[in-house]
Length: 147
Image 1 (cartoon, one colour):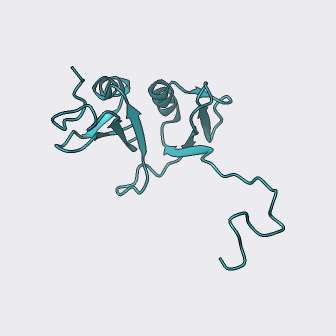
Image 2 (cartoon, rainbow, N blue to C red):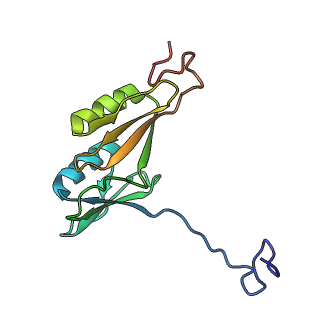
Image 3 (cartoon, rainbow, N blue to C red):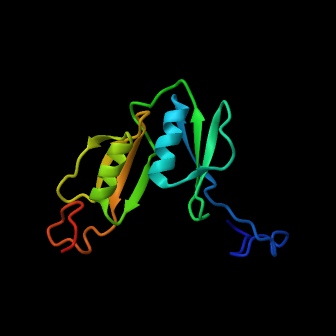
């Protein structure tokens, strides 16, 4: 923009504005089931007691963004525009654990891809990403544990 430097306008210099992701919002129909699933999946805890409209789960170590579970009667959308990517150092073990917690497999591993797609108990899609792919994988397979 003309007249602006990288430091901002003269009146803005010295101000330290920031922007960041404070919460990721997931609409849900069964709040109790979703609290149980996402708390166990991410090892998060409620920031405050759940209210009638939802709850905010937080990373107890303070490292990750909040996860806001918001009660809604809408249900999951047929076409979604945004989803979570969960990075995993042992993706096979994490997928197994998430399935035991109530997730469902929506799209399994495909040759050349570093992820699988799951749905939470309310039907919201998310991916589990193999952080080692393809770096330590010689065959490009998802979740193959290094030997």
